[in-house]
Amino acid sequence: MNGEQTNETLKLYIVMSRAMKAINEQTTKFFQANGVNPTEFAVLELLFHKGAQPLQQIGSKILLASGSITYVVDKLEQRGYLRRVHCPTDRRVTYAEITEAGTTFMAELFPRHEQQLHSLMAALDCDEKAAAITLIKKLGLSIKDLSY
Image (cartoon, rainbow, N blue to C red; front, top):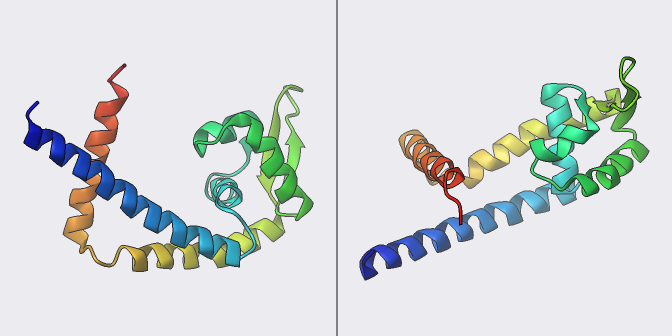
């Protein structure tokens, strides 16, 4: 690998990191202004769109350590946004299920979140977004095959 390739690789890493930092800062502010943190929103969004989920699988679906899930689920349950439901056929499995209050909350919040993301990424037109998706997906998939 030559010096120019290395410089471009480092530049790409920095640019991607700064873009994600800027997006995450804005979405975090939005979530906090609406009474949730990003992890709580991610759990609610999963349940809102995919239905009840085993507690043991939520962490991997939203990329969160399993130890943190119990804390987040407890907080959302205390606020009435979700409930735990025991599996009738397997006592070892407990599901998180969104409540009516959680559904109402997400039905109001999620469209606003979508609009915020659209506004944050408005600098790119549809073709540029499609190209970015293709390239970043290609990069992500290629990394899964590497081992260090």
